Length: 147
Picture 1 (tube, helix red, strand yellow):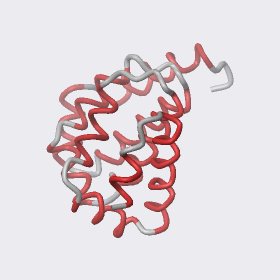
Picture 2 (cartoon, rainbow, N blue to C red; picture 1 turned 60 degrees about the horizontal axis):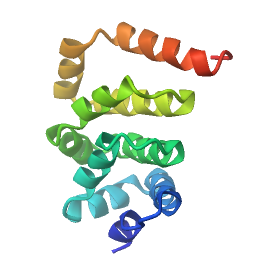
Picture 3 (tube, rainbow, N blue to C red; picture 1 turned 45 degrees about the horizontal axis):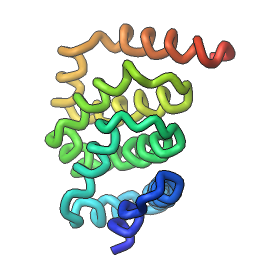
Picture 4 (tube, rainbow, N blue to C red; picture 1 turned 90 degrees about the vertical axis):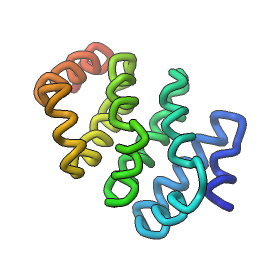
């Protein structure tokens, strides 16, 4: 119930807070959070759909990618995200990310997803890892010269 409760918040600030809570809980108890998320219908698809909507709320996306990055460390969640098209959704979103912190979290999420051999192969087929990081760094450097 707490997972769906965190995701049902209609205001982006409240949703971001709920996602941040889940992100922190995943650090403390990855197995429990992963099991709760996998047991709830449509939770992962809802998270991925939020990325696809091209929301411009940076705080919401930072919380979302932080959560997905942590969840991707769990084998079963990593597979479910990949099976749901999460890798492609995140790759599509990379080009529109302008915030350096958000971009790094999105790349960290892809990196954690790449712990799945099939995902690593997909990333290798679609992109040279160097090109992805170089593109992301160049894009983020425009907004944050200290990178």
